[in-house]
Length: 511
Ligand code: NAD
Image (cartoon, protein in one colour):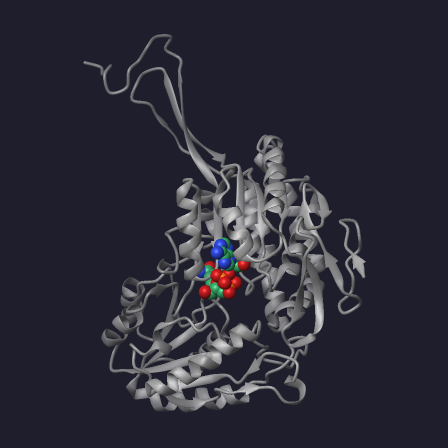
């Protein structure tokens, strides 16, 4: 078996099984546990995409110490210089886009069109964050005292931990790592156990672009073993998690004990409202893409479609016809529209919710079955599933399924649709299809979510705008845009007194 080293050329897909070690202090090292785990292709589980280290507490410790040492130098590299490295990484990623997209499709199943988009998102983030290296603006402001200068500067935090999910295995690590290092922090990242390869591809690129040793360290393994070491470590100053709300609660609670900065980007149950006056063809395209893109495994997936009664019947009928016509299969086939579930557990969850929906009295309009014959024999495939006549309080309309299962909820008006849309534990994305500008602006104001789209589905965020949600979707931070710079820096107020005498703020006031 081949063992990757930093200088080894990338191996072509399916050529041989890669064994990837942890990346700590610029070296590829085995886990202290001596154990490994397999990363298998969910479209064909006979294929082992890579073998990774099943790390433990000691590996986190080694990575944190490497990051701590690197921080002493990295924080002093001027931000524009740090940003130039990130810009160079963007250029390299562009060259490797196709190769990394194919790796990603094999690793987690989504179709090539989407994995190319995932790599592109990392490229966009790199260009954007490279620009931030020459901004990172802080205010200068008049002092209340004479001969005194006042300003606020951004400072890096130190060692940051990143814990990432499998559904955007390069884009999400890029949202965290790139602003963190441009701001002068050093990092320890633990990618999801289902998708470590794409994170390796990103970090390899950054290293090739010139990120010095110890600035980014990767420790692979399971959340159950690595969660506590990462979230409780006294020398880690910030934790950024993207994952389920359940894990978010654990991470947030642990991080609070040592007062770490903590960013939680969590689950969603995203509504799309379709009004009678909507362009129905457009709404259908959006619904298909929003509900079944990434096999419904997006935090922003369209999982509830609230349809006004005047078009409900027509919309439901046409959506079902289109869903049935989707081609399911291995995402490496360019003709395929929807890939597999990420793993057996996720597929079982999807099927369980089909049973729950039926038991609750929702009408199964199409799908609901596992696909396991013929070409599907070795993968975790399922039919695109549409439930009709769903009541807003049913579990299938309230709980995040994270699969290709969408609920249609009839409604009488926008006034009725808005509370249905809002009345869930989550608040990530939302969408409205209408041609009425007044209704559009009302919805923009009243939908309680971190993101609202008008005449577009609930998915499709761009990297320079704030990304995140309300309620159980997060804890108030935003990734993307300037919010990321805010998270990875600490403000320091600086006063320079050139009066040559003691001047007391609030006390020495001019008469
Ligand atoms: P998950 O919560 O199971 O895992 C996320 C990460 O947390 C993984 O790396 C996992 O190993 C780690 N983890 C697990 N237990 C842990 C613990 N006790 N302590 C610390 N880390 C632990 O989520 P997932 O299945 O990988 O991803 C799907 C979830 O992520 C969905 O709920 C989805 O909505 C959410 N998500 C949210 C966003 C967003 O930006 N809001 C984006 C993508 C995915």
